[in-house]
Amino acid sequence: MTDNTLVFDVVGAEQFEQLVVQNSFDQPVLVDFWAQWCAPCKVLLPILEKITTGYQGELLLAKVDCDIDQEIVARLGIKSLPTVVLFKDGKPVDGFTGAQSEADIRTLLSKYVAEPAQPAVDPLLSAQELFEQGEFAQAETLLKELLSGDDQQPAALVLFARCLVERGALADAEAVLNSVKDDEQKHAIAAVRAQLAFLRQATDLPDIADLKTRLAKNAEDDEAVLQLSIQQLARQSYEPALDNLLKLFIRNRSFAEGAAHKTLLQVFELLGTEHPLVTLYRRRLYQALY
Image (cartoon, rainbow, N blue to C red; front, side, top):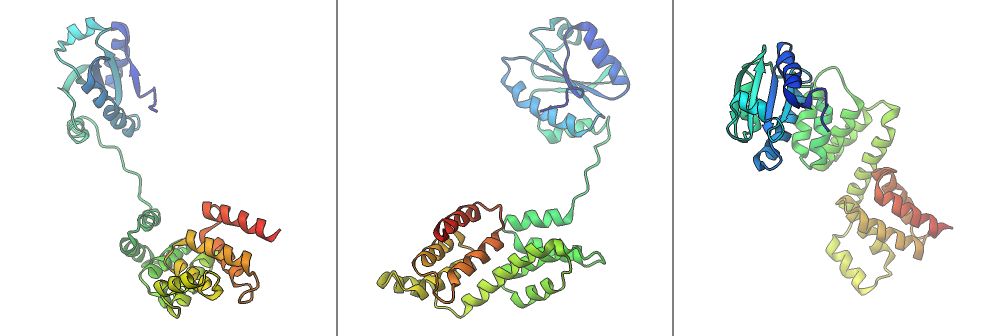
């Protein structure tokens, strides 16, 4: 949706004089000459709207339907569509015909209006986005820069620990977590510690292929089910791990001092209460309990 104080339709000579010519003494006004039947016009308009909105009031966009306002079209000598004319200080100063790229339009505008200031980029937010995209090394590099100063943000430290976990530096991740002193991060810290625990447990367990072979021979091998679940959790295969743990809990909830139940709760803490798998398996666990 566009701001209709920045992007608006112009109908008739009186509106054109007021909304385009007069406004152009205060800020440049782009005039987009278009028509419903013009396919390139429909491609160009969203680009113009995006650019105009981005200038945050330093630029206006007026739209003229050429099938309606033929008098204005004739006065300005518009021969083809789309045509865009830039008005400044009451007169046309520049323009172009045909669909243009965003970069080319910005280049034209740069001669008449300053580029809008870009909002400051939050390095922690950028690192979080990189982490969620699986770009762990890039996220770690960004966090190192952020944490190199005096501002040791607890959330940045926890995310840094998660990056270390992803590349197997478990002891370093543990040390970083131990340095975080912030109650607001306690759930995030607990989640990372759960991941560390699964990775460490998996180190001393049989590999997945061997465990699956055991289960193929005996589907009720409780030890193999629990160990397979830990291996899956260490590899972040959460759904099959949760499924195995729930089945083990239903079949033998007392096995290994209630390990299936304890591990399910660890996974819930790791994933967080809003995760859809937690919602699903917490409900199934409740049904199994009661």
